[in-house]
Image 1: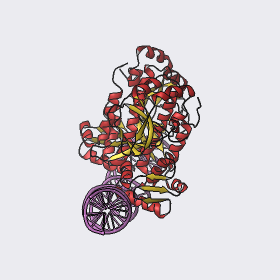
Image 2: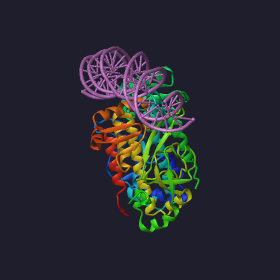
Image 3: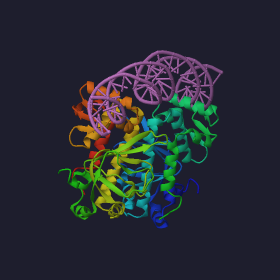
Image 4: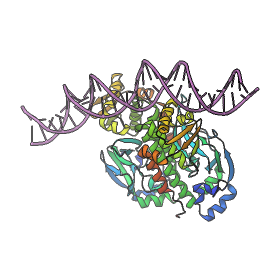
Length: 238
Length: 238
DNA sequence: TCGACTGTGTTCGCTACCGCACAAAAGATC
DNA sequence: GATCTTTTGTGCGGTAGCGAACACAGTCGA
């Protein structure tokens, strides 16, 4: 299953065959370049996006310009849940954090599909619950854990949504996501580099020791991961 | 509409008449005493709870015992969304934060009602989206705002879910919710008392100047409030 | 009426992170 | 190859909140 297959998105991959056949003509390939804003706070969405190789950050931008990541969506999920949840918009922004591809479906179509109230709906709702867990755990992590731990968590979350072990990501961007100073990220990243967990070079991070990151991060990563695995099995279970 | 009417829960209040008639025999009054645990992390829920006068905290308890509130649910909402979202459980805990009453419905019944895929479902989903916004904003607030501001936000959120201007709540409990030290809450509460916004006395807080709290808190409170108002209109709009 | 307990106030040293300023190094551009 | 821009590294004073220890005051029960 390569990146040119919509089914490299895990939600699409577990669609029942009947739904999949109906969906195929409704899906449209899109490039998702770094920094692209998929939706803006308060704006009504035109499409939902199923990333296949891209990673998207949901973040809240404060009045003073500071920001904080609320959750991250990659090939395991879908961007734009407020369309089928019924609110049409959210107070947050969705930005492509790691360039790649995805497929999208128009707002009207996804609502129609959701309202069939069948397996598609239940799948999307289970995904939404997993996303809720991620947000909740982000709140906890922001409250209690050190920048070191949070950086590890963030790297692992990104890694899970990519193939390979290299991320393209400047420290400045990571700082925006985590809602901390860029210098803080520099320090934390240096520590990780010194103990040999990563190698950093001008916007490219090679993860050398994934298990080491898992040992260094807080419980938040495992909680979220476990909940995604529980709620979104690899095969169709309907 | 007094507290003995299930319709003092705002979700129940906006149910279409046909649904309401069907629901009435399915609802059961329950007392919700301070500290009661409605569900435990990872446990399957037996009921959903619609508080009428009680307030419930959703909180995550860490391995080391520290905790953090993720969201709060009062007479505007329902506790136990994971039942109709399909996950059956969540990694968090629900605890009664302010004693009162509520009505509950069995897990099976709420699932049946949700799966009618009518107005009830769409109402519950819009509520869930509002709850998501609250969680997201909690994450942001934990990241960026001072304890002072967060205490104001927390007081306002509680106040919105109560009648009157008095809360029964020790500083120790507030500290657990906010995920901070009790001493920090003492200091912040003293400041608020000195400038005349509240009066504190052994577990009882009188809010004297609500507008003052709103001026002192961060934007997070207003963002969440606005989103609840937008997603959950006072009257049925279906 | 005398504890015992619960809730609140205060202090002190400590640490993580902030804000700012600036230096150095690695591309990019011409 | 000289210059500009982007990215990363470093140092410094300031501060919010932590952890621990303790004093004090209502409240309740024996």
